[in-house]
Length: 183
Ligand SMILES: [Zn+2]
Image 1: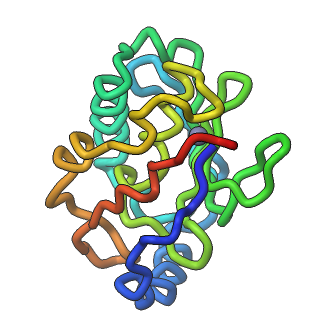
Image 2: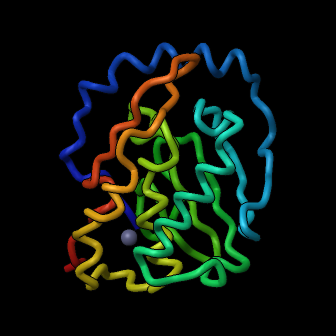
């Protein structure tokens, strides 16, 4: 389970909302395309621009690879797992309202738009966090790695993001992935 925790620099994102509407009109509302990445099923229920670009499967694959390495997992850790990218501001998870991502029943769900601010690339979503649950479980976030992610952030510097028809930088906010121990 991941929730937005404060430190995002929201002002950087404010201009993107109107551009997102343009992208939605251009792409049309396609019905949940599905594809495989290294045997992982990926389902797209979002019109976020980055989910519509040709580089999306490759970007997912690299993001998963970096996350698996961080959590000490391998592709077999994600065998039978489905990843759902959801255009809603929150994903539906049992027992918790307002989550930006969750892992349950072999399914990782992540929002492509936290609150009013869309993500510009797959790397800055909570996917890295949820892969952790798929690999180590730990729903109470007791492992110290839930509060680190520095090595992951380093590998995601300088990436291209997409805001509507525009290519923009995709800044990484490590706070998106961090979660203190549940109390
Ligand atoms: Zn979590």
